[in-house]
Length: 107
Length: 127
Image 1 (cartoon, helix red, strand yellow):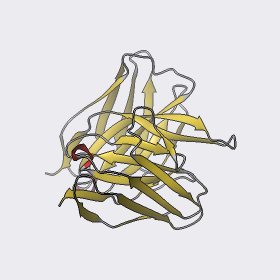
Image 2 (cartoon, chains in turn brown, orange):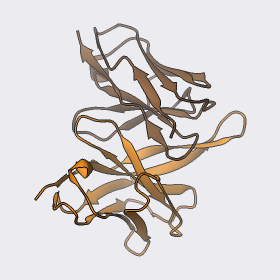
Image 3 (cartoon, chains in turn purple, yellow):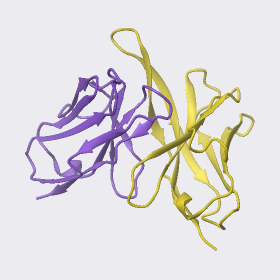
Image 4 (cartoon, chains in turn orange, red):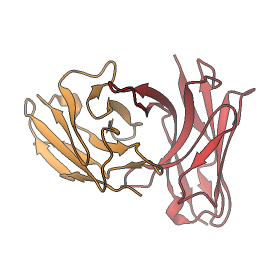
C-alpha cells in the first residue's frame, strides 16, 4: 500500500496567516493527489484534485502543488471558516489511501 | 441537487455483519461516469477507503477488507449497499458513502475524486 504521510499533524495559526501543509507519498504517484477539508461532524469536502486543480466553488486562497512524492496544500490567507482538518489522498494505485490529517487550529 | 444518505443500524455485535445502505436522491445512480464508494473513519483516525461499485455491479475493494466485504447496487431503488462480515471493535467508525467522479488532467490522463459525500453514520461494534 502507498503510505501518505502528512506534516504537521496539527498547527496553530491566526486569521490572515499563510498556511502550508505537506503530504509525502511512500512512492512516486505523479500528480494523483486530492486534498479534502473536514470539519467536526461533517463529511469531507473536496478542495483540490490532480495535485493543483481547484474544485469548482472552492476559494482561490486554496492552492495545491507537487508531483512525484512531495505535495503541498497552501492557504494563502487563512479565514475563520478554514479552521478544520485537511487530508491528502492518493489515487495512483489500489488501495486508495489517505493521509492522517492536519488539524488547523486557531492561535 | 444530488444527495447521498447513509442508513442502517448504529450498533452491531462482534462477529456479526454490518449492513449499511446509501440512498442517492436528486439524480440517478446509473450514470456512466460515476462510481459509488464506501469510506470509513475510526474515531480520532484518518479516512479509509473500503470499496467502490459501478451501476452495472462491477466492484473493487481494498484488499484489507476483501475477504469480509460485499458492496452491491440496486438501480431500481437508486441505492448501493455495504456488508462487512465478522466485525470486531476495530470496525467501529463513521461510515460514509460517496460519489466518485473522474477527470482528465492537462496531459490527458484520467484521474478521479470523491466529490459528493453523505453525512456519515456512526457504527459501533459492541456486545
